[in-house]
Length: 345
Image (cartoon, rainbow, N blue to C red; front, top):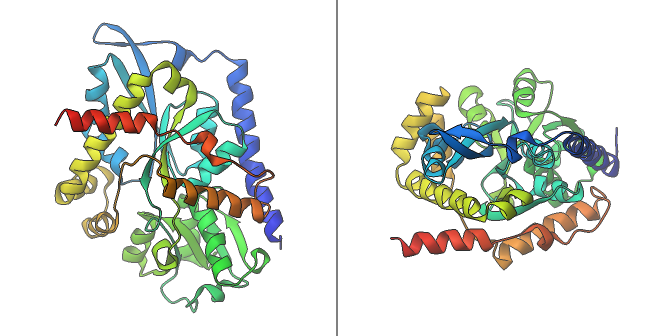
C-alpha cells in the first residue's frame, strides 16, 4: 500500500504530466479556435468556450436556457460548451487553449498553479462547506472517520473531494497510509460503491445525494460537519482575460444574473433539471435546497482559506513547492461586473 506522500505524488504527477502534454500540444499547433473566428449573424465573432461539469448548478441551468449565448451574441461573440467530469481536466483544457472559463473546486486550482497553467481564479462561487462529503453504502459498518482505516475509498484525484478526503482523515487522527485510496472518476466510482468494490466514496453534489436516494447510501461526513472552508472558483484563461476584459466582465455579469434567478426560483430550476438531465425530482430538490451558490470577489477570508489548502498539500508533500496563491487570484473583473449590475438596477 502506498504511503501518504506516494499517493499524493502520484496524483500530482499524473495531473502535471497531463498539463505539460497539453501545453506541448498547444505550443506545437496554432490555436485556430481562439485566435480564429466563427460566423455569427453574418459577421465574424469571437468564440468563447465554457467548461462545465456535473448535472446541476448555475452553468448547467444557464446552458439549458442559453443565457450566455443570448448575452454574448449582443457583444458579437459565440458560446461553445465543453463537458468534463471533474475539475483537473479543466486545466488541461485551459493550458492548451481549448476553454476560456470554467467552474471548479479549490484543489484543481492549486494543481493548476503547480502545473504552471496560465490562468486566473476570478471569483468565488461557493464556500465549499456543503459541496464535498464522504458516502458509504447502505449497510456499511463504517460509522465514523476512524472506521476508514484499512478501507478502500474512491475519489477523483486532484479534485476538491480528494483534498477534502485527506483533510477529513487528518481531523480523525489517521495517516495517509491508513486508507487505501482508489483513483476513480464519478462515473466509475458510483458502480464501484454499489458493487462493494470500494468501501467509501469522497465526492461532491449531486452525486452524493443521488447515491443516497437511489441506493440508501449514507453520508458519513460533510465539509460543514468538519467546518472545512474550501472555496470554489470561476477560473479563466489569462490570455483571454487580457485580450477580452469586456467579455470577461460580461461572463461574470451573466453568471450573476443566472445565479440570482436560480436561487430565487428553485421550483422552476428543479423542473428544468428534471426535464433536461432526466434526474429524479426529489433528488434535484434536495440538492438545490442544500446548495448556496454565490458570486463574490476573493475576499481576504476566502484567500486565506485557499492558502491554507495549498499549505496543507505542501505539508503532506502533495505538491513540491510552497505556493503563493495570491498570484493566481484576481478579483478586478468580478468587482467591475457587480458594480455595473448594481448601477444598472
